[in-house]
Length: 533
Image 1: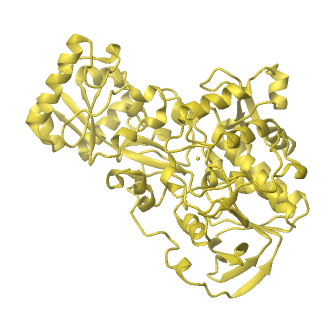
Image 2 (image 1 turned 180 degrees about the vertical axis):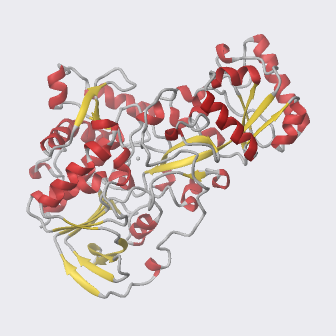
Image 3 (image 1 turned 45 degrees about the horizontal axis):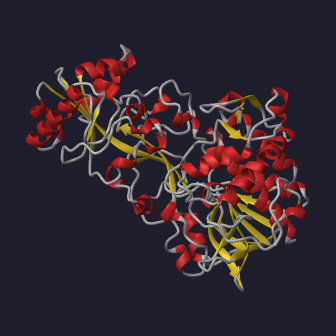
């Protein structure tokens, strides 16, 4: 077995990869909280969508028995998905001379990558021009592993980080446009920011053009339904085209780059998230179709460790990227508030998400219902005199998702919780404020503000699910692996679907790390697939 290196040459492909134990969306827009710019622009509207229906996986019946086929085609490599990782794989394989077909279920390319703001890298030409040449890759990797409590795989981080500079240089060579390299929310200049802060501008059109110029056959409105397996090897896929015909595409290798299953709440609920009180606000088509297709082909499930991009929001009010005051911000920018569950109990120190914004929803997952409480003095601080926010608040009051009362008991009635329990919770909390010591959850003393200035408000907040990171277990070449830990020959899973750099929580300490994984995984898988031709 050879060692993985920083380069992506064919000679460096690991022929017998070790078994090792997720974004198409970058972490920056969520992390920054107050004053953050759009993470997905107009593509994902936090808090502005109807609840996602809990449904059976789209292909549950299709994979149960062989599909009939109307026609067959042949190519070298077939790629499922034309998002960030799919386009990277397509360009890598197409420019090497392979016959590549890329199927995309939507009418356009880009997927979640269209809203990604940038990408992590160490050792890029952009950094060299800025004089950033003394970064410690080891320190960055250690920080990420420690934040994940060592539950993720070190060699996978080594590959992604050490390949990152070459990957960004490769993007530059293909016309991808950046505005700057900066520290984002960290201390090191590792974040390479796309033009206009959007992959839709800086990445997608340029990489799509490169794929087309390389001869990649991209087919839109085409849904992959089944992986063709022959003697334990992936030898193609069966797709349904926009005309409704089933086509079997025979290929030496299949690369799946489908963006995760966050839209399928049956899958999401397996991670302990109460999906009865949640909404889906991510990109269309990110259901469990690909996940179940891969499981049916013998791939090992990683969904027990899936990490999520999600935030809290007040249902029906404008999303964060529409200027919504009560989407995302309410979970990070009001640490002086009181959070209670359906039993009117506090359940967390309300300034906890300052460590990592992606922790925001985690304590609420077991709750049937969560309310964030503010008295008038707290709300005045939060609203900061903004008229748009006042209009949103009035709309929330009209819909009933926000309630208001002059007494704690009346507030409890409006919230649908026990009045005696809520009064006791408030009295206990105010005692901690007086003592400047939260004996229950240890909230920082500076945020312990008495709840006492009427009127009182209760904001019903729901988890807004955006991206599921990590679906299928893969090895260092991004081969899907079996339950026994063996690679499935010819089957690769890239991007967030095959990401195994995060476990249960998206640590977001390496700025742009998930997108770095997208590009790296697409290129590595394509390189390995090319070596099989």
